[in-house]
Image 1 (cartoon, one colour):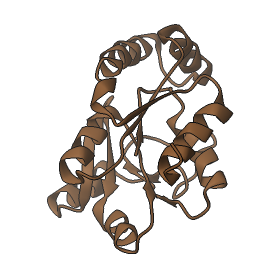
Image 2: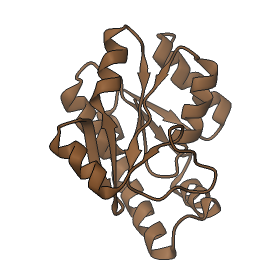
Image 3: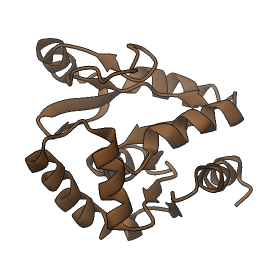
Image 4: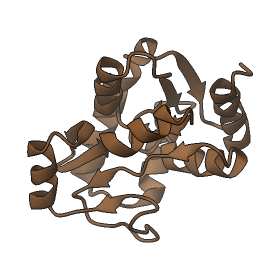
Length: 178
């Protein structure tokens, strides 16, 4: 499971890992947030209505779910449990709240925390992404500072300042070559 603050590159690292490790099962999260430019339903997220998400909560269908910046995100338990039962490694890209929930429900999960080279670099990434207003960006950066203080709760910490290096480090952890 790969986690880290918003904007650290979880999605970019995850896509590169899926190319490098084709047998790696990828868990596509559900979200109630609107699609961003370039995102595809079923590939990046399953985009669902708040009502449908609430129904899944009531059905206890999630391995984990959280409210994040005004939207809900969650991981369906069924596909992850099926893949694990078949002996396949499963990649989850989650925020820090999701990582804590996974640790509680799946104690043998390997938690990898991505960090930026610096908070300034993270701010620059978020600004380049251009998806938040100034107040929302400030909140994400404040949250990122708090989340990075909890990096020691993860099994591994990987600095994502060079994509190829970060992907190689995470791939080595997943395949046991660390």
